[in-house]
Amino acid sequence: MKKHFIILPFLFLLFLLTGCGSEPTASPKSAAKAFWQAVIDKDMEQAKSLATWETVDYLKYLNNSKIHPERFNLGEEMIGEKTAEIGVILHSKSQGQESIRIPGRTVLVKTEHGWRVDVKKSLGSVIKHTVNNVFDQLNNMMQKGIKELDKTFSDSMEDISKGLEEGAKELQRELDKAMPEIPIQKNQGTKAQEI
Image (cartoon, rainbow, N blue to C red; front, side):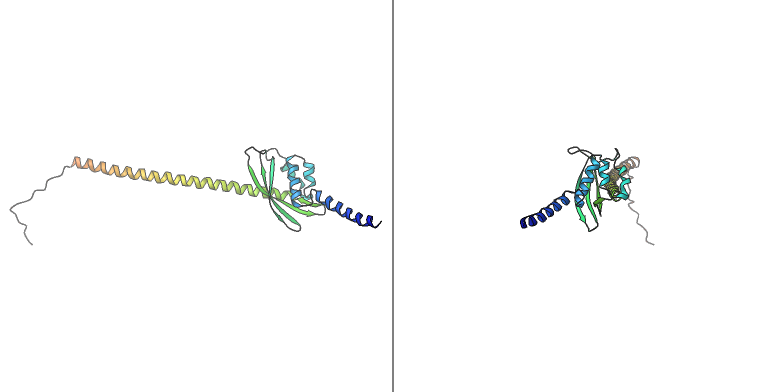
């Protein structure tokens, strides 16, 4: 009988530990992974169950064919006592295809029901990172354009300089033809008077 009392609490503890571990919202990473997979699978009911109640309405923006991700990768984790952020990269195409990479952060909040995704903050993060990437790309394009413009301007200035130099030489040749040198005659026999 004593053996049953020792084994029974051990089994109960084992059941609790494995039961909590398999819960999709037991950890921030498992909640984020389950959430993004539900979004990709277009299972908005599952995504709803993994989102904070206050931000469920924002799921409609993820259930849009124009911006619907086809896959995701989770990255760096910053986990606090009540909140967590996990880096995410959303991809516009399936694995093996060239796709647009949309970086962001999955923001999670610990609730009485486990970890839940704050959809509003997560979308805000994705938008912010996307805008920053667009500006970075535009800046790089402008820098490249400026370098090319600078090189073109430099080449043009060099061409103009050569053209002006050749024009000046040509003008000198023409002037030399038009006005032949007048020989200077020396007066012999006259001396300059001193004043």
